[in-house]
Image 1: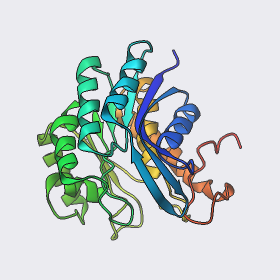
Image 2: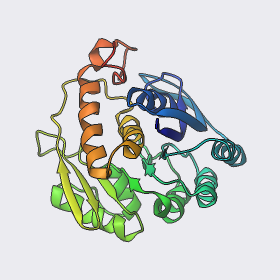
Image 3: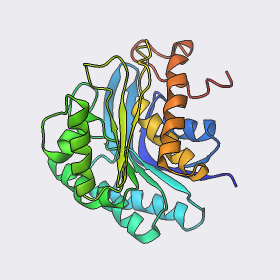
Image 4: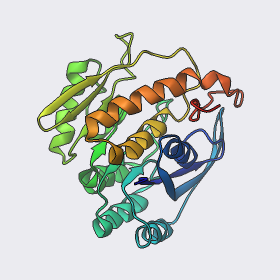
Length: 266
């Protein structure tokens, strides 16, 4: 059976992140993709010029339209923009009870700029995080959720992952790409009874736009096709490394370009 995956995220007019990256990822990994758009962005490889959030009621209307008619095997949540949208999505999950929810905690831009107001961070932590199956924070996002300094070691990563489990997350994939004292990029999958380290070599490319979106979408596409999160994480990371390795072939824009989602075909 071909899996059906739903992305709930913002639109990236440059095509490298958000809804566009998610749908490409779903297709590349054998899943039929659907979308709920939470925000429109005017952006390219050089940056974001403008953002327009969608009204929470219309986010809820999109979500209900999909679930009332189409089988949903997995959901990926990305940019949720504000507390109203977060609450609308959490209420939708309460109504429809999706089986696998990957929450990409999009809170902080690459340059360190916060993308969510404090009220929205609280709503994400208290109302949406417990409804996820897996959350995928990078180190600054985990620190923001917990109100702690950013982890600088793998031991600190594991401690913060345990704290996120205590907040109600069933499983945490801590992404260690921000660590500076290692030549690889270690991620830790932490859930009750499991601590598993995944490593990937750092790829020599500046074209990393949308890597977080792409990884979380890959996890949503793969989880219905695999036995558990550990298998899905290992395969998703290997596929993303290949997409990064092929990114320079695309020659998209003059700034930080996207990964090559369809590297296996062209």
